[in-house]
Each structure stands twice: as C-alpha cells, then as structure tokens.
Image 1 (tube, helix red, strand yellow):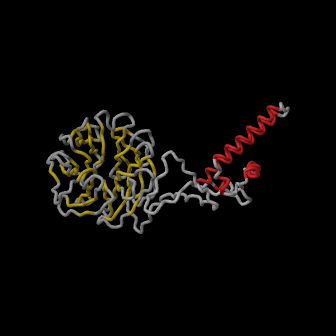
Image 2 (cartoon, rainbow, N blue to C red):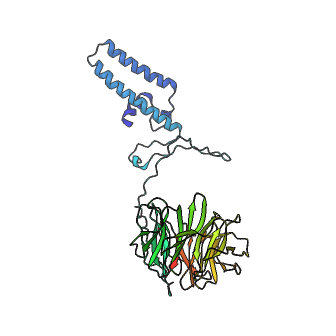
Image 3 (cartoon, rainbow, N blue to C red):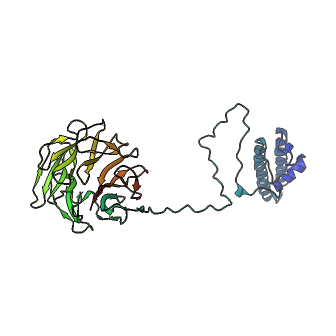
Length: 408
C-alpha cells in the first residue's frame, strides 16, 4: 500500500499516515480521475508505441491504488488504526473485531446471525493431554459378602448374562450371542443358571452351567417367558409366561418337562420361591395397583402381603434365607427405594433414600442385600448391609448392569 500511495501524496499533498488523506473530498477524487483521463488521451493522440503497454500498466496501478485507498478510507471511518511499520502485527495474530462504544444505558445489539465468529487463537502454552479414563476397580471388603451374584450386563447391543463373586470380584460374561439373555438366577447348589433368551425367536427358558457351557433350552413355544427361578429342592422352575398382554405365573417340572399355570389373572409377574419351597412371592396388579402376593407351592391360597404403608410395591423381590422377611422395592417410577418387611407385611423398614433402586436380593447368609441403582447416573449393582448401611458399588461398566440374583 505504501508504494501505491506515495506518488499520490506528492500530487495531492497528504500523507496516508495523516487523517487528511482518508477524508478526501469528492473534488479530489474527481481531479484524480480527470488527470488519468488526460494522460490516457495524450497517449492516444500521439499514437505512442508504448500506448498499449503503458495503458495496461497504468490501469493496473490505478486500480490497485483506488482499491487500497477505498479500504483505507473505510478503516479510518471505523476508527481502526492502520499500522504498516516494522512493528505491524502479523496476520497470524487474527483480525481485530469491529466494535463501537456503547453509550451509557444502551444495551449492545447482538451480532447478526449470519456474522461469522472468528475462530479462537491457539494458546502459546501447549495443552495438557486429557486424563485417561481409569477402569472401575471393585471394592475391598474386610469381611467380603459370600456366594456369587448373577446379573444382566449390557454389551452395547444386547443384554447378556454375567456372574461375579459376592464382593464384586471375578466379573465375567457368560452368554455371547446376538440376542437378549436376561433374568438369570442360580440353582440351589450354585452349579447351574437358568435364564430367559430370545435367541431362537420367542423368549424361552434356558439352563447352562455356571461357566456358561452346556446351554439347554427347557421350554418351547409357550409365549414369551421371563424371570425363571429353580426351587430350593431343585425339581421345579417357577416363571412368568406372557401371552399377548396377559402375564401369569407358571411352573415347569424338571423331571418330565410338564408345565402348568399357577395364576390366571393376566397381571402376575416376577415369582420367587421361599427358602423352604412351600410358598411363592410375586407381584400382581390384579387389584388395580401393583402389590405383593403370596401363594402356596401347589398354586392355592393366594393372599396379599398386608400393607402398613401407602407405598405401591412390585417387581423383583426376595425372601431372607430364614424365611422371616421379604425385600422389595416401592415408590414412584424414577424414585423407587428398597424396603424390607415381615412376611405378613408388618415392620416395614426403608433401606435406601433416593437414587431409584430396584430388584433387591439377599446374600446366602442374610447379612447383605444386592440391588440395582441409578444413583451414579448409570444402572449399576450395589450391595448394602441388611439394615441399609455400608452401601457399596460392585460394578462400573459404561453400560448398564442390572437384575442381580444372589446364590451360593
């Protein structure tokens, strides 16, 4: 720009570093245009051999100067300093933002929506690398809970059946098929697992060894079957059978494969055997609201668990090993808590408070309760003492871990 403007300052008496240069009057611009036309006319009249070459060079020079002068005029009008000296700011430092002072009491106007926001400039100090995520480490117990816990672990595509020790160690996935494999529970001797899977179409009941081997299908085309549990005597499996919108409790005999329904209301789910195999606890909406019920092992004498509070209880529940108490969850969706009560529904005790907690299950010694909770933002499995103390997280997968069932 300086090379271009220097001749013009000689003719028009202003320096491009002075404000006068940026406030040319219309007369000066007209005179500049007239002088250019005069020179070009003289060259035409003289038929100069250099006419075409001179015209090209002069035209390019004039065009460059007019453009530079115009840009400079705009920058001066916006009060942007023009510094072309040795200390000029390099282009890599960015372009200053066009702005004006806002008078006192006036709210500054937001920039137009189509105005591009300058990209932030890189810091001279290199950024530290982001911290690496650390794998979840199961806790260390002074007196670890006994037995094993089977549970559902989501692999990013399907629910799979998994197993771990009662203290959270030894976690491993048992099923690995492109299908849902959930509702696992352990046999009384701890050597086998029954679960529900739709690997062959409908949800059927399957059995496998504790290491995931010897998978065997136990039912066929009875609808969709869920929540299987082997009786303490090891001879029958109780489960939920869903046909259309109706869900009922059924029993399968393992010695001959015969099945028969225990309920027929169409709203009965999640059965679990009492420790002596003489009663079955389950949830039902038969009265219009989900509550816990008990029936005898022969399917007779269905009666509700008396409520001593207005809480609505339902879903997966469990018996204490001595058969004297039951553990269940209750409360509104998204804010459910774990409770225990006497089998007749008296002596209700709340063990958790917040976090949305479900599916409690007693440890074999009755001292611990495992359950699912959302308290840390993800479905994970926790244990706590039977009085609600010493709550400890056992799983830490980025995906959901849920439906725990304790066994030997």
